[in-house]
Amino acid sequence: MSDARAKLQAKKDSVDITRIALQGGVYTGFTTIDVRSLEDAVVRYGVAQALLDGIANSEDGLAVRDILPDLDFRLPQDTAGLATLQREWIQPASGTWDVTGRTQNEVYSTTKNSNNDQKVIVIYGIREVQSGPARAASNMYTSAIVFRRAAVKTIDIWQIEALDTIPDQVIYGRTPLLFKKGDNLRIDFILRATTAHALTNSGSSANFGAGISGYNDNLMFLGKVIEKIGDNVTG
View 1 (tube, rainbow, N blue to C red):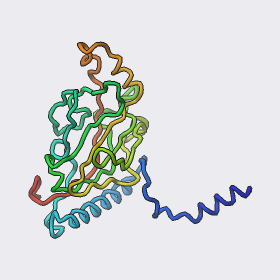
View 2 (view 1 turned 180 degrees about the horizontal axis):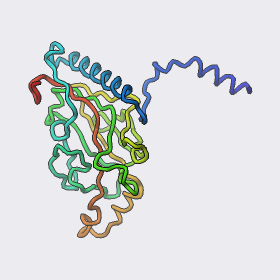
View 3 (view 1 turned 90 degrees about the vertical axis):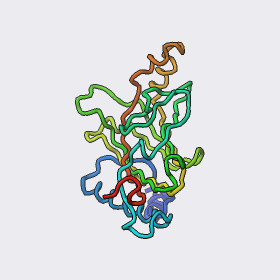
View 4 (view 1 turned 135 degrees about the vertical axis):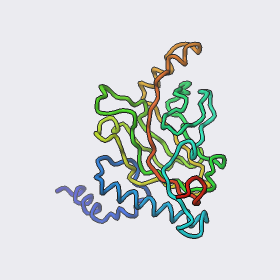
């Protein structure tokens, strides 16, 4: 073994992976037990943060539920004329990407208008819905998703193209993303280069809408919202 390789091996053996600032990206191929363990950890961390944030004084004052796009997110204001968020998972909500030469598009955000000052949000995975094993080709127009706090602080980037190649069409974050009470969450979608090219070259502004019809994804964000019991669900 060369000296360089021996030094690398020795250094590798001394690494404490629990001290790494961020292990980003995604996992695939979780077992049912893995998923249950992950979800239990997400709930525990989310509830702990909600208690620290003063959303309730004890666990029996909190409710834990799934993320619901129409209750928990807001849409960006742009030239795509985006529709009001519905309960269904579709990106963009109007089915119309606002590309204008860009491949990165803001899709969801949270503000006080979505009551982000009354809840904790934890995102741990993404599932591709409204598609299945009979698909003949890729159904996705997004290559990666960028998660931010506010408009500038990138906290992780998930490369999601594997969703089109795995049987259960679900991926899980290596590090679940926790947004505390009052955090301004922002989620950007990065379009595949071929998609962006097709959209920006779909013709004049008069037929631009027709040119981008059907270029949308159906990605469900797996996660939990922790809020005061009674805000939306009472149990």
